[in-house]
Length: 69
Image (cartoon, rainbow, N blue to C red; front, side, top):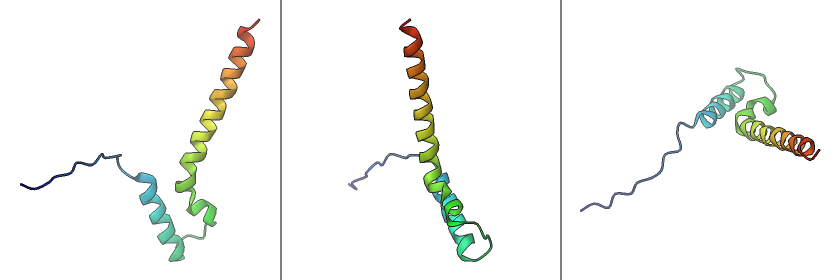
């Protein structure tokens, strides 16, 4: 009997594939973007998530400040 392992799927790796496409286009001189923009699909989601967390913390602080009065 074969030993079958099940792996968890994390979904479609959209940003990873987009990064590979942008890197390929940059190396083939099809696009002349800065490397910051070519690699944006790798760091962009992290920055957006961090921004959301910061906004939520600021809003939470404002709500707590006004609820004390």
